[in-house]
Amino acid sequence: MTVLRRRKFCECGCGNVLRNPKARFKRGHNRLGFKCSEETKRKNRKANLGKVLSEEHKKKIGAGAVITRSKDSEETKRKRAIGISIALTGRNLSEEHKKKIGTTMKSKSYKRSLKTISKWKAKVIGRKNSKESIDRMRLAHLGAVVSIETRRKNSLARGGTGELTSTKGSYTRFTESLREFIRDRGGRECQLCFIPEEKIKEKFSMRLDVHHIDYDKKNYNPENLIALCHSCHTKTTCNRDKWITLFQSPQRLTLIMGNKG
Image (cartoon, rainbow, N blue to C red; front, side, top):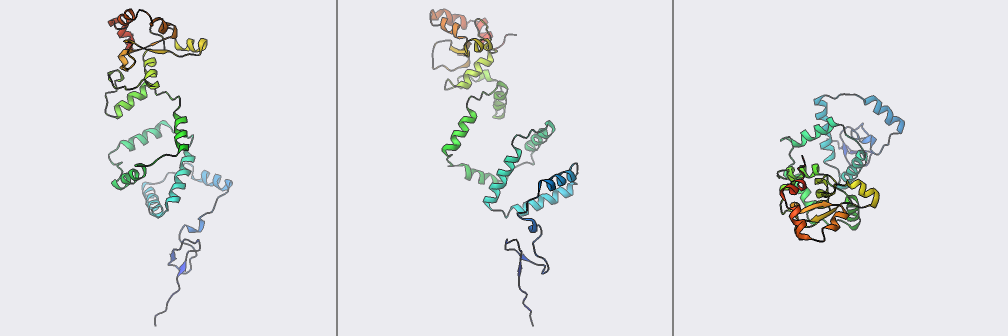
């Protein structure tokens, strides 16, 4: 005669069937939703401080996390990502930590699967940011100035040469980033009277102007642009041929391109 055993479910409400009839919870489910006090957190932190895990132990933890998190819903994954983002906000990583991250990202073994890439593409393609998100991004980048070193790194990362002055004709608009590049190239001083931009800001609360050497406002080639103070820029409105000849002379052109040494 076959005896039918009544199925017993986990008491946390997850719906999992328990194999052990004496058990009340599935392993690890007895602490779901349980929040530790601040004192308990401090004790746990102190107990684990300086603790070194073996490679085998790390693999076990990683394998368990993959199995557990693979069953999580999208809402749970979203909440976890938000929690991690909040925890890392304002955190300063050590140089050693940064090097480890860079080495891992550059290694051949660190490759995202096609499934992961397709998921990212599905989320990004066709996505429209809300007006609130657009305003936040605009305010975050408002007035941001990218340094020359960062521009060189971006150029090298995208397969470029890293030489910013070799991008002839690459600018299609007279943008603020282009004007900042011209000011940085000239050492943040007027290329006629050599007054520093700091003094101009202190006296007149103004920045260096960027002058078109050939007076063609649509020519955005960096070789055609020069940083001048407002006083010197005003002088160039008369006798244009004289200023064109001066700025296009070999000696002056060498100074404009930043090779003062």
